[in-house]
Length: 418
Image 1 (cartoon, helix red, strand yellow):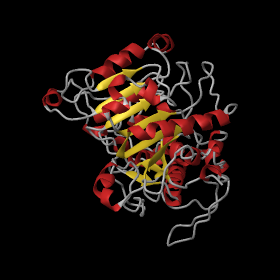
Image 2: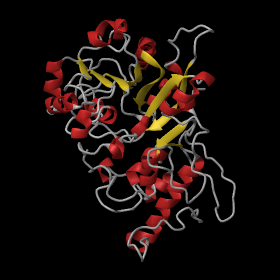
Image 3: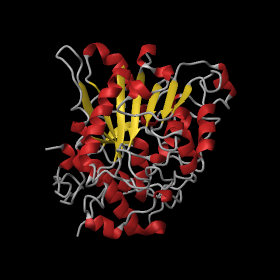
Image 4: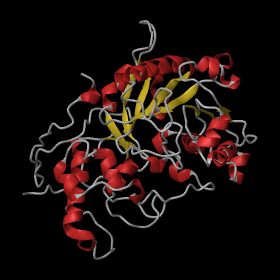
């Protein structure tokens, strides 16, 4: 059975320990599920002020809690009744604007690093490509950035042509200007290449000539968000064309592998609720690969919860439609080469999902580093759930610390007793 089709409504029992009492309630599928630490800390209201939020509030964030735990999709009716989901704009980080003069605050998002080569496929309005370019290239408005020459390249591509994108997305040209202005000390536009009419299943025939296989360009990340077949504008198409979409994914991965760096990864962002979980993306993506016993194995590494707030100004769009769509259940599916002993040093530093034992939140007081990727465990779900219940029960005023005027989260991990 595909890991994505595991019954999400099945309860998970937790053993009682010291002052914590756990009970059975529905949880989402946690198999190989990860999230960014900043998403987790926002969900439990433990972010540092100003740098990552528009204010100094430490109120637990409801949208981030739902991103990680999917309480509604898991059918946790107790939680959803008391604490319903909110619009993503309610996240305190949603109003923070990208600072073109200081990129350090987001430079470790999803383990993107300066100097990486990244290929984006099927990017509707190029806002995802812009977000990634700012992470791996920076912005040439910084004088220090202009002087410091480093490697790095972003190839941003779309299945559509330029005129179509201009008609569909009102801000497309502004995004394009911002994207082309990203630089790593090179002449403007030299390390940002735009490709139109690029077919994910025919990359060698449709990619810009600057990145053909003959030029031996290799990418540390190849990304395709919400892959689907060409469809009528504004429609999703995934349910009616599931088999066609599965074949699309198989061909994409097979076409992308020759362009992948020896420690590179393929990322596909995809919704995880029904019917999208029935794709079995973690298995389908690997079915079109032809390898022999002497070659390294390409494998599924896990899923990372999508947090758009770490990728400004990215906004997922419907096909050929300027409208966005709900995606709090979406995750980045990560695929990469199986680790070998001789690749340990480079793999350790470039892998999106941690390989050193999968960092976990082990204690109630632990505050993981904001740049890290953590494993979503029952403990993480329990901490988020009980924190919100405790905050709700105490009330916004009652849950504030008398000394600081902020929510202190004390006793937030004690399980509610009926």
